[in-house]
Length: 496
Image 1: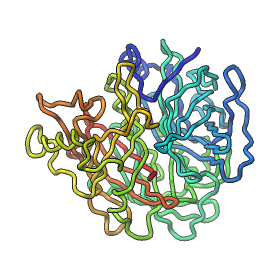
Image 2: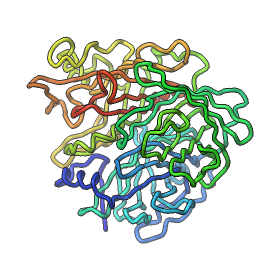
Image 3: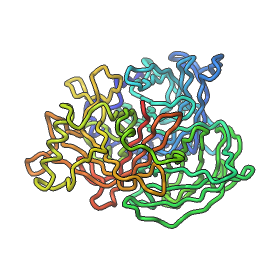
Image 4: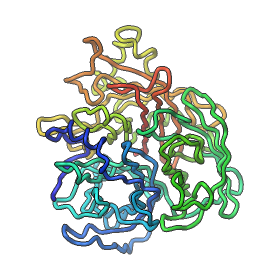
């Protein structure tokens, strides 16, 4: 079988029915990657076996552990990618839920090329299909993207193939990754800020963000977490202890203690030396976990002093907008995860005129979805989405121009007790957000529609670069809402 994807978001014939099949098929590949470590693999070519790549370039091979994103109700995608900059290769191995073995299997192998925008365009020569077998594809699959802070971590969307559908369909598995080279060594409490990640299979939230103090003593790692719901609503504190050790998934902390590969609710956590933190949490029903949120998290070490909000919004960022329930709406194309950029546009730029006009039209008038307009402490941007007769693509290479401006993030006021925590941030969604556009705007009662909703954002620095992590909830008032219905949303950005 030869399957080609030009980009992450592609308009296929009869895509609505195919997307419906993706969500309902019991045979769809269940990639419950309890955790991933990375094996350096070369693409090898179609019909060949993926071969290990041994890089001789010190400091250019970056292994990561990945989590915690959930894509559909029938598939938990916890994925990672090691990036070998000497060989321009990338590969993934991990544990599959349908396998009882705890030995990782190869899942993805390919190459990458750097785009002028700062994204890495990934070409998968080998990918995992519904048979859970690493399969060569000729031509290779394109449309996977990543952004990286080398040696610290990365954000990516990787592709897998549902060969049980006709024709075969391709879905992305978005992931966050952190360095997994060593166990944490915190003799005194190290504070981290985190956000939980939307889960399409969970309708309720135990928490949206939080602060966690991490200490270690030998192999024991203790998480003293204070989770919150958006709106500065504290939830019951959580103190649990896990155990860290080197494993075939890297140096990871498992919670419950001594539960590597043996528990259905296993949570695996990687705490990178540079300050990024991710956890993968294979729990299908809400339970507190190590962070009190009942989901996987992505976090960053708390800054030693308050972050400069003006500097944060003046910088430029690449990353992803993640809303896993969007695909369930059977839009004309998949918008669950969109490669995006922020900071290239200003509030007064021409690219943002449609966004600004729709926000003004709903501020105290129209559908009244925007009670307050963005402040000067706001960041503007959106997804790379090009609409054409040949298909709609999310292509962040810059070949089709700059990203759209259809989202604004107002950080609001920084918490006085936690550096980098913005618990009362606001996200603004304009009338041109997908599946709509400038030429085909989102309308409410015949007029341009736009909304704003409360979120929480955490900001830190990793290797001198700002990291912004944001969580919005469908249960807030007003709820997080994209064009369609209330739904959880996450925005994850690395400074360029």
